Length: 168
Image (cartoon, rainbow, N blue to C red; front, side, top):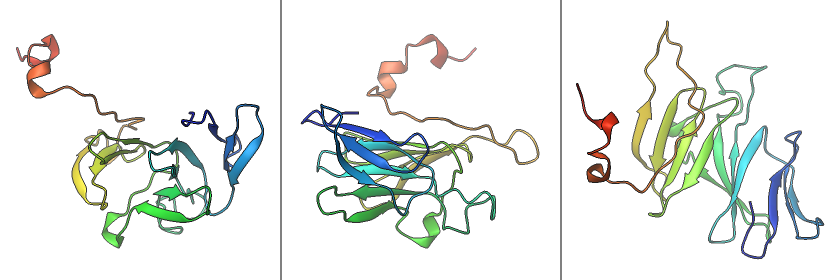
């Protein structure tokens, strides 16, 4: 992904960090601490970089409780200041050891995919859940992995005439 200046944002293929390269391929910035299996970095309109940090602790608990679960963090490259943008409270725990995506929506909310749990949810800028969807378990509590949720700019009336939206 590129920012307005044409800088390229990338994740180290060994999950060792997130870095920004200029148009000539020169390293401009790197964050390589306090993250584990991070991915999906995005430049935000305010200049920060938002990163999906899995914080996978599969060797410890298999449920993410040892490190406190997955999180979405925003980093200000110039200052290095990092803010956890989700979860913000203890009752907002989420965890996916692998996968997961996020999408900043036009209304300022964020769509988050918790892949292994089969969950997609939207949060507002204060971190409150607007809505959520879970894939139903299919066998003794196992859930199909949901790799990515996306928001498209269609209304209910836009899709009402689609063949797949009619029953029977």
